Length: 86
Image (cartoon, rainbow, N blue to C red; front, side, top):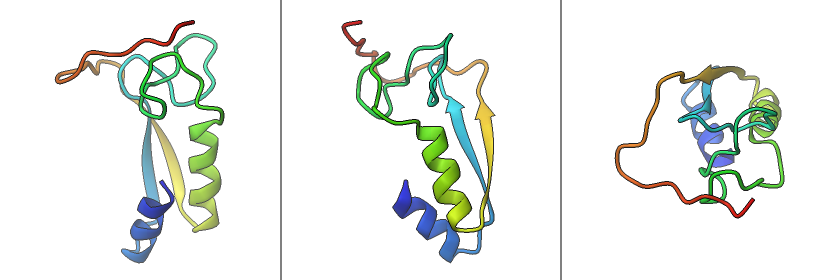
């Protein structure tokens, strides 16, 4: 994510939309939704950090605003999810 933010900063972008609920999973520590598999490869597996907070911290270091984007109807087209053991 850092490389992408650096690239956006070089382009003069000052606002980022970060999709925090891509497909019924979460990229923040939710009490309702399981963790997204985008960080670990498995739905429900804790990545060991808060991706939303990381994005906020790194974007703000670069003078960028962040908007959390909740996708209410997304679904998977290509791959079947791998579930964590918990």
